[in-house]
Length: 216
Image 1 (tube, rainbow, N blue to C red):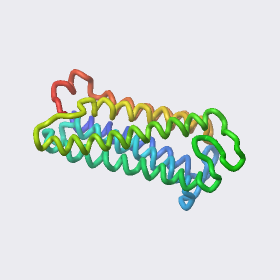
Image 2 (image 1 turned 135 degrees about the horizontal axis):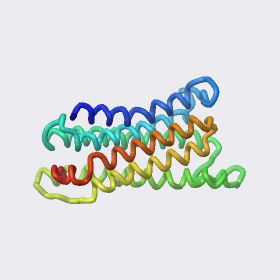
Image 3 (image 1 turned 90 degrees about the horizontal axis):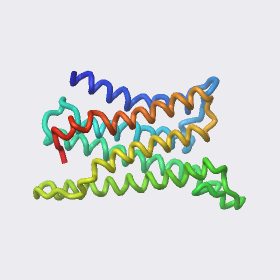
Image 4 (image 1 turned 180 degrees about the horizontal axis):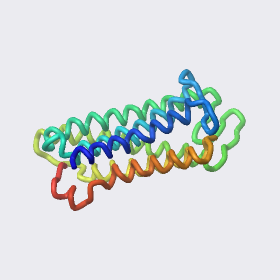
């Protein structure tokens, strides 16, 4: 059973970034076929890896039976979550480089002095919010680690905030699917995979099972 759960976590975590890579790089009907040499291309790829993949795997490290007790689970959890946060920052750097040339930030074009369509403005502003929460969460994780050696528990809401970030990021991916010129079937597939990964990462196993093995 443990191996089956592990497999489900990894499938859920890898599905969204794989679909995003296909949508961004593949040539054919419904995809965009951008180039890896373009900074914008890396934005959706890195963001999907950050939130739909590595952060989901970070939660897996805390609920799997394969790693043993929390002493073994914590470093794996930290590694996945730290990598997820770094990839998110990389994803922002990619879109910053792409937008600074226009320049367009927060959905506003500072050259033409005009706003983008409302969904794009929402995507930009919502994205900054998710990124700020991610940086805050990572900072709290480092502080928890420092206090843990002294046996002091702080930021007991850290786990709940992490789940919220995964869920909010999946909403952000859905908004991106709305504004990005993929074919409708691909948009639906990526949106469903992103939301599914977030729900799976946030709520599996059940609250009762997780409560039976506290890891804070």
